[in-house]
Image (cartoon, rainbow, N blue to C red; front, side, top):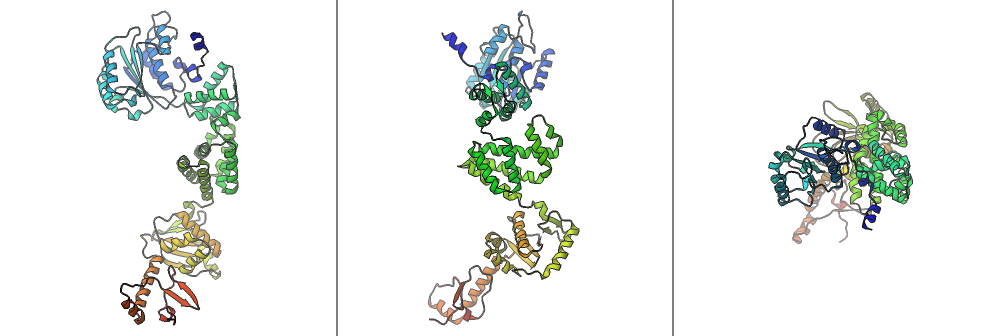
Length: 566
C-alpha cells in the first residue's frame, strides 16, 4: 500500500525533468566543454565552485560531475566519462541522492566549524563503492569564517580520492582564499529561446497542449531560471486543466495585454494625462499588477533605446511579433535623451511603488510625472549658446537655435519693443506672478536670484544652485505667453548676492529706523521700555496696507504712516 502511494505521488516538473547528463544541461556550453576536455585529458581538478542565480542548475551540475567521475559503465569496467551511463549502481544511487560516497551538505543549516570538522575527519577514509569521494556543499557562502579557515588546508591538498564541489548564489561572500583553491564556473542565465525549447520538450512528453505565446510569457517571467520557469509551467497546467492558454497565463502572472501596455506608453510620452489615467484604471480593474506594469514600461524603454543604438535588434528572436512591430513604428519618434529621462523616472518609481501604501496610486503619480515632463523641453533644448568671453549661458525656450538664429531672435525682439507688456520692471513682474497664481515663480524671483539687469525680453541674474533648468523653462514660457515675444535669460557665473527679498528686508529696517527717530515715536519708545517697532502700516484713502512683503519703500513723509486720530 505504501509502495503504491509512492508511485501515485506527483513529482513536480522541475524534479521530474532534471538533466541526467551533460547534453541536457541547457545554456552552459563553456562548463561542459571545460569538463569534457579535463576528463578526456585526465586533468581533473580537486575542487570546483559553481555560481549563478537560482534555478540555473548548480546542484544539478554538481551531481552530474559526481556521476561523471564515478560512473563505471553497464559492465562495471568504465572510467570517468562525460556521458554517464545512468544504469550502473553508482549512477542510479547518485541520481537518487543515496550514495554513501557522494555527500550533499547544506551550508545554510550546517555553518559551524564542528560541521566542517566532521567532514575533515571522514576525508582520510577511502570511498566505499565509488572511485572518488565527492563532497557537494550547497550555499557554501553561509559557512562561518572559522569553518572556512578550518577547510583551507584540506581544500588545498586533499587526498587523491576526494573531490569538493561548492555551489553558491553569493560568490562575493566566499573568501578569496577559498576561491583561489577552486576552479570557478559561472553558470549563465538561460535564454528565452533555451527555455522555450525546454518547455516544448516537456509539453510533448506530457502530451499537453500550449499556446506558443503563453510559453513565451512564462519564459520571460522566469528571468533566466529553469526552475522558476518550470514552476510557472506547472501552475499554468493545473490552472488551465492541461491546456496552457495565453489568457490564463496572463491572469496567473498578473500581466496585462502587451498591446495595452504599448498604448499606455504612447499616452505617457504624448502627455495625454486624462486618457492615460483612464487607461491605467481600466488595466488595474482587469487585474494588472502595478509592479508588472512599470516593469513592462521599463522593458519597452530599454528595447526602444537598444533599437536606436542597434537597429537590427528589431529582428531579435526573443521579441514577440507585436513587440517588433511596436519598435519599428515608434523608435524613430524617440531620442536617447528622452528615453534616458523616462528610464530614470521609472527606475525611481519602482522603489516608490514598493514603499507606497497603495501601489496603484503611486503608479498614477509616477506616470503623471513622466507625462508632465514629456511636455517640457529638455535642458539641451534650452541651452542655446555659451558666450565665450563672459562664459554666460543663454537659456531660451526654442529648439536648438543656432547662433545666427539667436541674432535674428534678438532683432525680432527689438522690432517688437512697441508691444505692450503688463509689467516694466522686476517688481511689477513679481506682483503680476502673484496675481496670476504663480507663487512658485514669484518666490524664486524674490528669494533665489539676484537681478542685475531687467528689460523687456531680457533678464540678467545670478541663480541659486538649487534652481533647475526646468523651472527656468516654465518662467520663460510664462513670459513668452504673457508678452507675446521671445525672452532670453543671461545666467551670470558666481554666487548670488542681494536678492529682492534681502533688499525689501533692508528697506524695511531702514524705514523702521527712520520712524523710530521721529520725535513722537521716539518719545513713545522711551515711555514704554522694551517696546520696538514690529511692522509699519501706511494709511491712505481710508485703506490700510501692511508692508510685509511689498517691494515699495516707505514714503519719507511721516503723514503717510500716521493719522490724526488719538
